[in-house]
Image: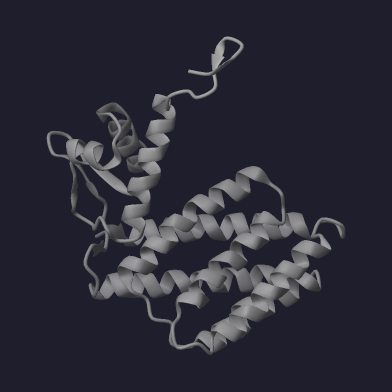
Length: 239
């Protein structure tokens, strides 16, 4: 093998890298609904599918259990977690808090929101109105998540960015699993995206906070209503 000094140019995947790889692949399959709530996640099958050893798969399942995607039970192994009302409430409460933190930071001084970031938000806000006219809601959902993340990204606060981004996986899973249908996309685009952009542009912190809170409260309410009615497989209500 070619070498540079005493170090090989190509090195094998470490256990940590293999664990992260396995976790990413399993998480993606759960978010996209390929692994459904209640499905057993058998280590040997996963090692064969991912072409990694058993230890990284075991560690990946433990990591995903901490994230809430997987449930581990003694003598029963791992299975895909159900979407519960408490999980939805927790995820949205955290996203609300992180968003308000981001808005506070961006509006603390005039120079924190760059012209480039403001232009990106304006483009996404305009897209929200435009995509609301399309028959499919897929572009609307994707654009809305990107708009939310763009606000967070504009802060440059790495922990806030990371935590918010990680929770987006939960939101995508809620949406895919619960099958939310957005019946007033134009109204939502105007009330919760365009008006939020305008509040940020005009440095109206109180208005931005109010819209952000209302936007996420309505989103959580949609999911909780579906869980309450029991209209979706794999969703449950904590009693």
